[in-house]
Length: 189
Image (cartoon, rainbow, N blue to C red; front, side, top):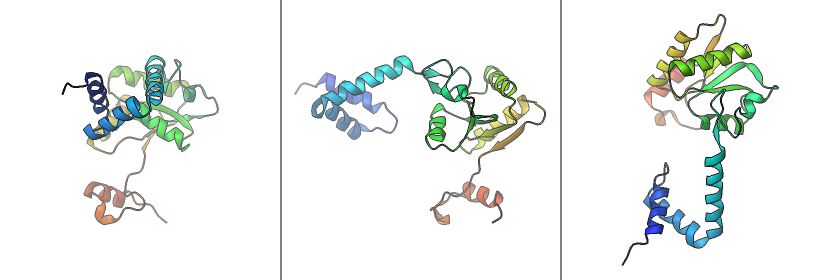
């Protein structure tokens, strides 16, 4: 039997997505090409529009359609604090849950150019606190120390989000590093 090259190409494309294996790729490809071709065309159009129109904010690195994102343009936000994240996706999570009212900065590299960009943002907004919201680990700790070393603005406070045991997870399911950090960073009740 001859291969369905167009179908196989579609499956192979889905497999390239993070977290999508062969079975899921087959299921997605079949669904959008055979079960619901209208959805397939709609999906293709949405992907094309996103690829053509989305970019990174010139100020903070967030995902946006214009040169500067909505958060950076919003004058009602607390401009005295910046939450430093690893990826533009992290900003979407914070904003979707409405848990931070300040500005953001995507620190996805450690070059002089990005540090200069961050320093300029701090100075222009009169920032008083940088809050690191990064995946706990040695690389993140080194990046935080690097930023602290490079940015020397008087009275600028550096902090990071708390780490520890997630709600509803038993102690026997927690790795040693998380458990020890939770114990070390304990708070009064």
